[in-house]
Image (cartoon, rainbow, N blue to C red; front, side, top):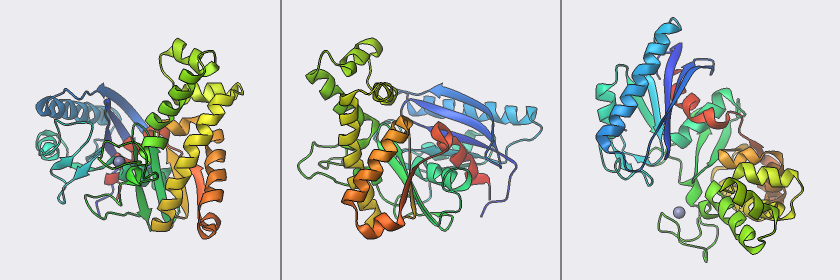
Length: 320
Ligand SMILES: [Zn+2]
């Protein structure tokens, strides 16, 4: 157990940016910053960017009258047992098989602790969000991929590489398309933000005069916000995308339920921004597909911390 600190720095490394925040031990964010990342950034440049961001937050801590006790850094992928090496991170090849965590820790002006982003989101929701007091909590982040973590009795469940399992790579369709991980028909092919976008693209192509095609032409994209907008205007095609993708998502949740038997499943990430229509559709399909035993014991809800789950969870690695 770590000593209790009043302030900690949370860093959330994603495929497109690194988010930094100075967080108080009650979960309040006092300062924030975001710096762009790209696949082409070298290992050295990524270390520089991280150390620079952490130092800036530490100076901000001084302005708030208290220095941070440490920095928590979270990222996707697999970390080794001692958390000083990255074994695999699919979207950041320059970090794969490197001692990136150790390099950051050696140069940062504060003690640094690393973890996997799905664990941080789960811990953040457990301590400060929609999972408070839940004994067996599963939090799934529906973003570019599907990440997540499991918290049991207040502790993050770690089976191997510090994760409870690869929640997004549960196979839901043996005849489905090939996933980046090499398997076929993984959940994240259907129910990640990209999965929703793919389904929306197909309908926009099939109905060139429809609302989805119009929104795509205007915004040059068709993701959560566009789907939410089309849905609120009563668009039937957007409704079909939600029906289709949430059915796959419910297959995944039903599978997680027979493995982890969670009391609550929380859905976060970009897709969850669709909000209540998404939640109601997932619950409906879940009731149809899952074991009645699980349906009676598992509630499904939206995560509460939104895009801040990663930085808050990262900082909370230092909150005892
Ligand atoms: Zn996969």
